[in-house]
Length: 207
Image (tube, rainbow, N blue to C red; front, side, top):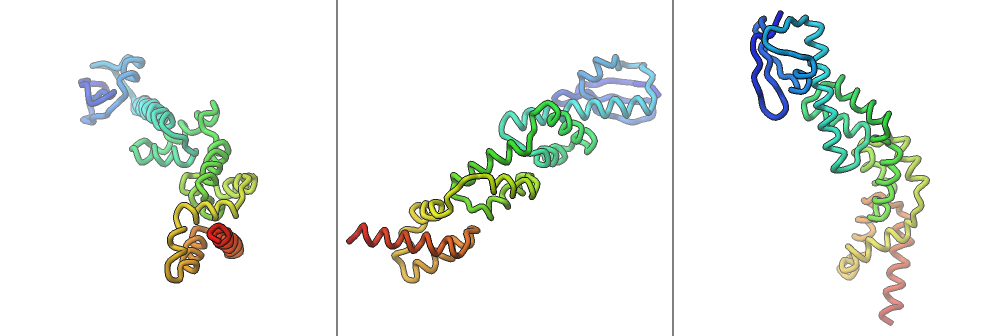
C-alpha cells in the first residue's frame, strides 16, 4: 500500500489518501516528521503506529488546553478527552504522562476543591458528591474532607444569614429552613443546634 495524495484539512490535520481507497487524517507534524508524501510505501502496522501517534499528540495538546483553563482530576480529564473524540488508548497515555510529570494530581485537586467547598458553606456530605462528580475517587474524597478543618455550626449560620434569614419570619419559617438545611446534607442535630442558636441571637439583638 502507498500514499496516492495528501491534502490539507481543517486545523492541524492532513488528509492522507491511500492506494487501498482509504482516507485517514493525520497530524501535519506527524506527516512531516515521518516524511510521508505521495508515493511513500506504508504497511498496515506502520499506518496504525502513525495514526496512534497523531491521536496521542493531538490529545496531549487538547489536554494542555483544558488544564490551562481549570484544574482536573485524572478521571475528569480522561473522560473529557474521550468525549472530544480521542481514542481510549491515546487518552490513557496522555493521563499517564501528565501524572508522571506532575500536571495531574488527584490529591492536590481534592484538597484545593475541598477548601473551596467548605468556604462556600457546603456540607461535607454534599461535598463528597460534588467531588465524585469531578472525578475524585470516593475514598480519597472522604479522607481529604475528614482532614479539612471546618466549623459546621458556622457554615449553617452563614447559610441562614445569606439565604434563609427572611424566611424565618414567615409562617412555619423555622421548620422550612430546618428542612432546607437538612437537604443540603447537614445533620439534623447540627441544624437544630445552629438554628436554635441563631434565633436566640436574633431575639437578643432586637430586645
